[in-house]
Every structure is written in C-alpha cells, then in structure tokens.
Image 1: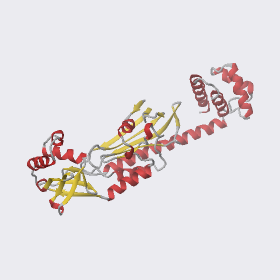
Image 2: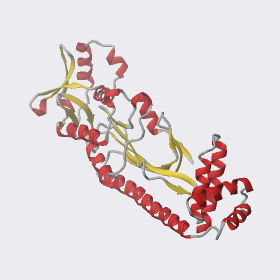
Image 3: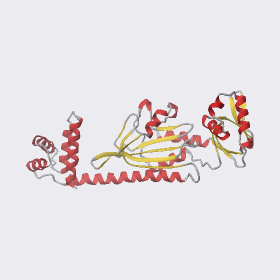
Image 4: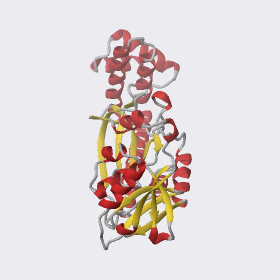
Length: 343
C-alpha cells in the first residue's frame, strides 16, 4: 500500500478563486473558457512585443493587428523563445523590454501557435504542440464516472476540484463504493489533470484507498494505475485513456460489490450453529472467550439469527460498544475471519 500526495500538493498551491465546489461548476468554467478562446497562427518575425501605457502587449500582424496582453505563462514562454532570462527582462522598463524582444525574436518559416482568451495571450507554442481542452477531459470523466463526487472538503476549504490560468486538476471518489478486499475496506477514487497551455501533461490516476485526511493525502492506496501523455501528436487519444482507466475502475467496483453482496447473502443462509450451545462451542474453537461468546449469543438471540451473518453482525455490534480503538479493531478482524465460514 502507498500514500498518494498529488491532491495534497494541489490543495496547498491553489488560491480560493481556483477552487470549485462541484464537478458541474468546474466543467462549466472550463467549457466557458474553451468557447471564448482563440488560436492564432503567427510567424515569429511578424510577432511584435510592443510598449503601451499598461505595459507590454503582443501585436499579431498576421491576424488583423490583434493586440493581446501577456499572462505570466506566455511571458515566460516568450522569454524562452527569445533566449532571454525572464528575471532579467522583469527588471527592465517596458520600452527596453520591448526592444529586447524585437532584437532577439527568432525568424522561422514555421508559424507559432498563440492561444488567447478574451484579450490575453495565455500561451505561445511551436507547431508541434497539440492542445487538449480541459472541458474535453472533464466530459470524458463525467461519461465514465457520473456517480463519483469530490472528496470531503480539506483544509482552508480545499475542494479537490481546481482550475486556474495554467492547468486543471480534479479529484473524484465514490463515497458509496466501499468494499472488502482481503479483510480490509477500500473505496475507489481517481485524479485527473490537464493543461491547455503546456504546463503539464494530460493524465489520470486510479486507485482504491482506505482514508483521506484533511490535507487530501490519500492513505493506504492499492491497485494504483497511472496513464499520462504529452501534448504532441494525436493527444486526443488521451481522452480514450481517461475513459478506459475510469471505466475499468467502475467495472471493478461493481464486480466487487456484486461479490460482496453475494457473500453476505450466503452468510445469511449458512447456519453458524443449530442452537445457542453449538454457537458457543464454535466460537470457542475460533478463539472467542466464553464471556464474549455469551454476549454474542444474547445479541444473536434478540435478532433471532444464528446464521454466520447473524453471529458476525452480533460481534460487530459489540465491538461498537468498546471505547478503545485497538479493542474494536481486534473484534472487527475476528468478525471478518468468521465471515469466511460461509464461503
């Protein structure tokens, strides 16, 4: 078992305006941004970074003189494209900075992609970059797992659902998906992420977990599967990766639910003993003290059930009366072992 920290890292780096309270609100936000975004294709020598009263702006001469402000990310990309240090340019006046970009802008026959929303350039990429919209990824998630929900709210109101100027991250769980695996309880969950501006890959990670703390660390995870792709080539295939990974998680959940339900049905139909005395003797064979066995018999008689399930249920009820967590755990483990008698 491993502890997963992806969601915890997101929790501590996200500002309140990047948090969303529901999957629907996150999807709506990303869909709106997709609809108001535009891709411009521009040869670098016709891309001009000019000085204005409000700072630097990008002039696109090949797109009817479109003028765009620069996001922090697109500014960083421009500095890299021109081979100048961002920290150095930030120290210059707007007039000097615009001259630096003019003098260092490379010339190429291949056009650049300028990705913009409203009047802001969000990213500048070469022609090899393949964009995948956050909304498309989230729609694939909804299609594969419509009944999954965000995790419990974490520290500072963190929701597990985030979208900012540079990337998106979503954390989903099935709060009703708990099943028993090798005597321990697990529930299914996933992380999915993407960036429309090239800050990170597109990917999905599925898992079964035992606990989520307020820091959104996922504790004691098993069957962890991760798939991710870079934004090159046919990145649309990543949508199939997301659908398939989550669909397999849902399929395994349903199979385990069915198996568990079948096991409980069998336990209800399997006698643990024909009478109270036989139940006491069988419990003694499995290491249950005579005092505890008597308590179990009394509870089972009240429910009029000496089935395997009836005895296990009685043990579980008695465990719930114990104040010490260690004592409760011992009884729960004993109950789980007795359930196997119905197999």
